[in-house]
Image 1 (cartoon, rainbow, N blue to C red):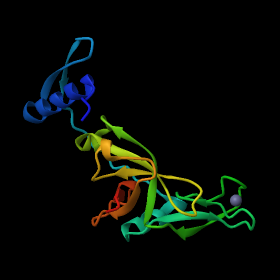
Image 2 (cartoon, rainbow, N blue to C red; image 1 turned 30 degrees about the vertical axis):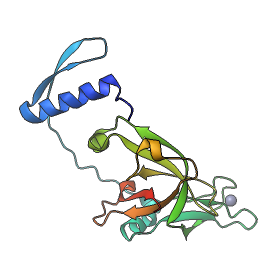
Image 3 (cartoon, rainbow, N blue to C red; image 1 turned 120 degrees about the vertical axis):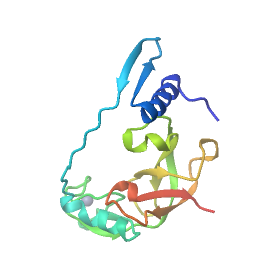
Image 4 (cartoon, rainbow, N blue to C red; image 1 turned 120 degrees about the horizontal axis):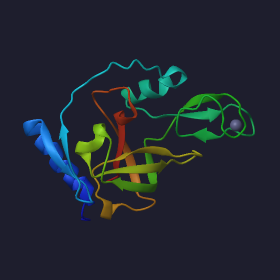
Length: 175
Ligand SMILES: [Zn+2]
């Protein structure tokens, strides 16, 4: 396993101190020390998925939906919600995506935003599907960096307690 970047491991140490004491000293890569404290706040952010809503409702039912261009002769299929075709501008319709795909590319993240910090290191993959012209950016679990490869067969998994977020779906290696 590769070593974590130094600022990452130090930040994790600070997180542990914050959880115990509510304050910590953070030392950056240049040796500069800063006092950091816990400062809780919360907001309720009311967010509309608008035309993308069927995609998230489908995830909650354990299905992946893509968008297909309705123009004859184009019929481009996207692996993501898209109300209009990126190729020709025509409206799209919803289609079911396969539950299995292949790794097109990936990255292993050694740092993440607040929601993903505890999962680090974690994998993000661009997944490709048969008959689909674009890729889906999604987490790839149950696999470590050294085992990943381009073309790796993967299968979708869904959160049994959906949050109506893209994190309701992730992929795992196909056994
Ligand atoms: Zn089109």
